[in-house]
Amino acid sequence: MTDLPEATQRKMGLVIDLDTCVGCHACVVSCKGWNTENYGAPLSDQDPYGADPSGTFLNRVHSYEVQPESGAAQLVHFPKSCLHCEDAPCVTVCPTGASYKRVEDGIVLVNESDCIGCGLCAWACPYGAREMDAAEGVMKKCTLCVDRIYNENLPEVDRVPACVRTCPAGARHFGDLGDPQSDVSRLVEARGGMDLMPEQGTKPVNKYLPPRPKDRTEPVGPGEIDILAPLLKPVAEEPRGFVGWLDKMLEKI
Amino acid sequence: MHPAPSVIVFTTLSGLGFGLLFWLGLGMPASEGWVAAVFFAIAFALSVGGLLASTFHLGHPERAVKAFSQWRSSWLSREGICAVAALSVMGLYAALVVLFGVRLSVLGWLGAALSAGTVFTTSMIYAQLRTVPRWNTALTPALFLALSLGGGALLAGQVSLAPWFLTAAAALQVAWWVRGDKALLQSGTDMASATGLGEIGTVRAFEPPHTGNNYLLREFVHVVGRKHAVKLRAIALSLGYMVPVLVLVLPFSHLMALLAVIAHVAGVAASRWLFFAEAEHVVGLYYGKR
Figure 1: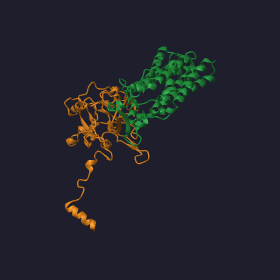
Figure 2 (figure 1 turned 30 degrees about the vertical axis):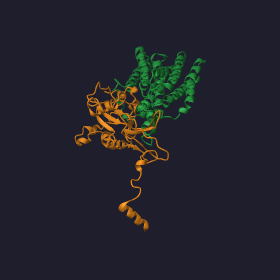
Figure 3 (figure 1 turned 135 degrees about the vertical axis):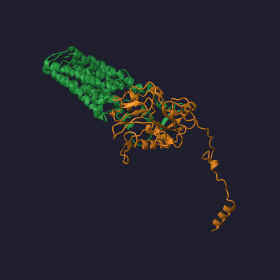
Figure 4 (figure 1 turned 45 degrees about the horizontal axis):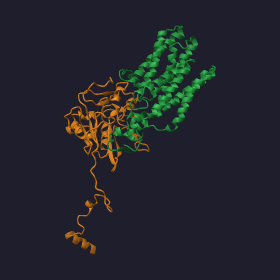
């Protein structure tokens, strides 16, 4: 049944640090790489080497410019995938029962053999987390790498979602957000983790950590290119010692 | 939202078909024999044709039967059940009337209620979506029902009733448009709440995730045709509502009635096209496209 569970035993999800994300898109690539050859139908591409390429992705990184009232604008890289909402509207609208939320860990999944590809779940999702695969005709979404996190064939260090495992900046964290003592919950508490579109009433499990205020920068003086310029000066203006001798000799040749 | 032709054809034709079935179920007109057969044939052709058109946009239509299972939570599932129940009950009712000249009024009333229920459940598929503020209102089912019953009355030749329903539908249509134009702004969802970055300053989309197109942009960020919205609204209002009402108050002729029906269908199709093309899905905010 596509009724949502009253409560889930755990709330597995991601915490994404907007302060740390460098916008490298490595999570996008690793997500596509893992999920195109594991759980469910592959993530197809259409016209991948042609003039109008497009494809199915479960994770995409946006970039936003935020302009404060005064001072310099800030660029924020913004990875977005399924938020595994507690009150997931995509689940209740499904006519076939293909979409469901797991009681044991709260992961929202699609049973692809029941999916008729009507697309209504994608309509109901405010975050654009679901994409219809153009080749397969079924709905694809983030599985929280359900085929990695419990996979005893993998080394323990790899039993996290592919995006978390690959992030070179450590901007993605995985854990149980239903347990207030878990690392991710304490991170959310300490950094003021937030919900996206809280007014939509979806109660997302995934949280976003807002960017910290940037350090003050000293005003750049006239004639200086950059505040870092003094640090970039050559350490020795005139070569001395052996290098100085070599320099002189080479000049004479 | 992307105005998929299959969905526009479906909601326009099946709305009209179920509207006609509603009046036939009430015995209005209480015709018999060949006349009744023609009325029922038109009603079933429109409603069944519309339902078939709706399966064209499915990725896996062969699994459509599974869609009857989730009536407890899903309006789409309820719509499927309501439609099949309405068609079965009205099919039996029609067979009894046409073949045996027997009119089981209770069966007809049940069929009429199920037919109206089908239109209501269809409208709730759209009205339930908080992600599309323009649709997320009680005015949506009201408009769909008024249009379906008005168009059905027009087809059923209910000359005295149809103008009232069509006028009410026109008023609802205008109210729906006026509300809809402010709906996204009033929903409280904007780029600040979408990104959570509004606390810092004004948010502007700097770079999309990919340089190319994707499913989300194709399906939800349709912007073509907005510039013609006012013209299309005028066409929808005049063809869909005014022309039929005008024809109905004039002395009756079959040719004029046919013209009224054609104008009505064209007007409703224009209105339905706008229903999708003008609808702003909040996911567009992530792409800075609102």
